[in-house]
Length: 346
Image (cartoon, rainbow, N blue to C red; front, top):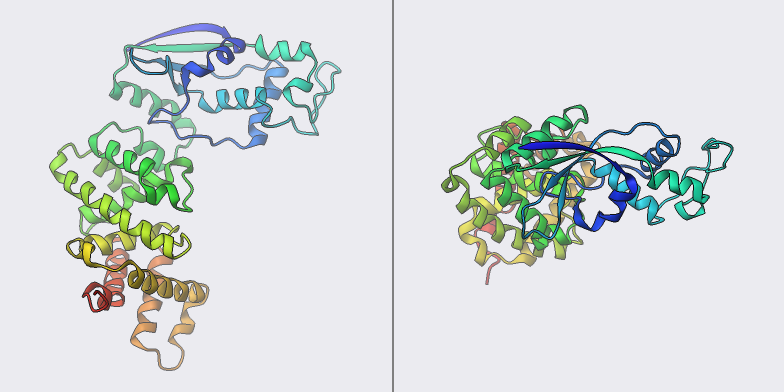
């Protein structure tokens, strides 16, 4: 891997924007708020320094010439402002006696627009970088930016990471769901589900365990599981459709996924309507009592009420701990028993 630093005007980065891929696999998508984006433009107008932008040169045959290694949020902020997607805040001080408050790009005088396009920044062009090298470079750059665990995992270049990322980006369940895709949340949900299935709920679902899973190199360990995942997600998409896209909380997703994984041999015989009705009723009861679960134990609680109480506590407090995972799994198996045993299957 070779890195060559060059001083470039922002106008250059605007001109070649169609040749720059903002969202390669290791990147986390748009994160900066509008106010933070505007702060960058304000800094440029006041001629403050901004950090180096790292661009990786792509291999021939790829639609883009460069991939962003570091600087995605800065480039996105610049291009969004040029495109008129936001205006500067109304409380900004003047720049050299020129009022910039509340202005969009083309409302600025030409002198300030030229200041933006003529602003010089150091661009580091990364050449001859293989996947492990570029991911390591990205991870080290982000150490001061507090990447969340899903973003750190996404910098790992392994078969399981690629498989999870591909399904999370393309499966109808995630495309149709109400789960936000920001900061690799789709990948995070699926990584938790894969991990609980891989270890049969015998390990805590914590960041280090998931990272260890991502570093598994033997495809025989996870390939069959990924094939099952596609069928399970297809079934969950049908459940989601019948329940107004109700599956959006992580532990709900993980628990249902694991329940279906344990019963994957029956998956083709399960009726989505009965499964959806059972899940919706159970989830409604959970939400009704989640604020005060102890009310379920008043007077003479039924077995169903005691189970719901235990489930809510295992759901709300340290939900990724092994004991909590096992407890919730047993409760769901009991709750869905008639559906899973085919009593409602024609």
